[in-house]
View 1 (cartoon, rainbow, N blue to C red):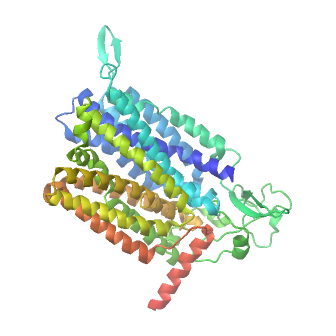
View 2 (cartoon, rainbow, N blue to C red; view 1 turned 90 degrees about the vertical axis):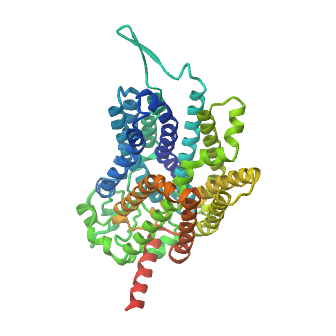
View 3 (cartoon, rainbow, N blue to C red; view 1 turned 180 degrees about the vertical axis):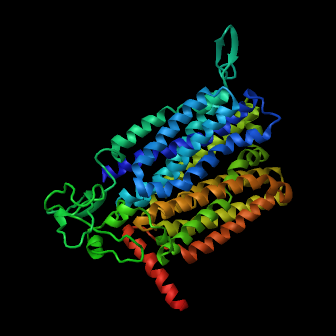
Amino acid sequence: MSGAVLVAIAASIGNLLQGWDNATIAGAVLYIKKEFSLETQPLIEGLIVAMSLIGATVITTFSGAVADAVGRRPLLIASSVLYFVSGLVMLWAPNVYVLLLARLIDGFGIGLAVTLVPLYISETAPTDIRGLLNTLPQFSGSGGMFLSYCMVFTMSLMPLISRQATSVEGKEIAAPHGSIMGGVGRSSSMQGGEAVSSMGIGGGWQLAWKWTEREGADGQKEGGFQRIYLHEEGVSGDRRGSILSMPGGDIPPGGEYIQAAALVSQPALYSKDLIEQQLAGPAMVHPSEAVAKGTKWAELFEPGVKHALFVGIGLQILQQFAGINGVLYYTPQILEQAGVGVLLSNIGLSSSSASILISALTTLLMLPSIGIAMRLMDMSGRRFLLLSTIPVLIVALAVLVLVNVLDVGTMVHAALSTISVIVYFCFFVMGFGPIPNILCAEIFPTSVRGICIAICALTFWIGDIIVTYTLPVMLNAIGLAGVFGIYAVVCILAFVFVYMKVPETKGMPLEVITEFFSVGAKQGKEATD
């Protein structure tokens, strides 16, 4: 059990760095504009922020097929290297064009981490704590944001130190403060990559292992990583190859082996035995044909796969258009209207420092909420958490609409706005934040899991870009109340979608989940025929 936890912690380092990056650039852009004289070039300023989104979208397009072909481990290590390189380039960046290149490389690392970390954790985690471990990326990302906001806030209080002076040919040159913010701490990404390798994603814990639990001789449960072997007709179990080596590899005599279905439309052999062993979730198990030929694109049109893709893509679209980025973007403005910004300014903080501190405090409040979600994910279930938290999001957004439409008085407006924003954030990270990625890592069959998750991740990034860049247009057209009203309507649609289409997956082996989607798709097809 502890081995699976260490693997999950190591893998989620990439999400911590993603959260660090998101918060760092939010604070650094205030100084990057001054450093590179971008006050009159809002397009370049926006491009600096958006370049990582572009990089993540581009790399996600290819990551699924590559992950199915070469494995998850090499791409996770590549993600760490990309984080490290982008940090060095960002720290050095002598001009805005080099900074844009660094942000693009950073986006490549983010895209790989967001796509593959939930997938890897699901494939190695014990069934009874798979939801908890798959919530770690959300916790790590929010923790990274909080730590980064603390650093940015501290640096914003030191104007005399914020610009590092160096001497070149007798001239004093100020090093870009924003670049320093972007680069500080990024050297830890390579240490994170080494931790990933040493703690399980490299070396001995290869892709052909899965966690299994069974009752020992003393009546106590015993668990551990078990090697998975390929199915070969007419060949005894102890002579079958694993997915680490094609048939004929070095396999311990008498070793146990497991076979899982390649397609969601095929029944998993020995599924009864798998359930009795309390199977914890498979690694990337392929028949020998799938290993040799890679992903078969025709398998995406299997009824069960199409059903699972509909659920996964639908959740990602609804998550983005539920307004998390809009509320995040306008948190300082909303809270400033509520009087919080003025209060902090009265104690000696500049408006920039006040807005950064507000964001840090908001992020801090999200951490215990994620902790509650981690506790409930495998107790109450994914579906239950979604159906319980989405109505709270609807109420919070509705309150934000009302206080911006009605004249409720300054004090009431301040109190309701502040409470609504905090409630929205806390309940979002308990449900709609981590669960779409958790479900997407659970519902797809092994042979196409990488490409299917990449499709869902691509949907995530495209939705992120659309929401981010349509927000100013919508604000000019319908105002803040109109935008939050649309987000509330999307949350209502999300509740209906989850209630009608999203099954509960807690405590179920991944093989059983994929069979569930296959059976459901076939029954639906037979009902329509």
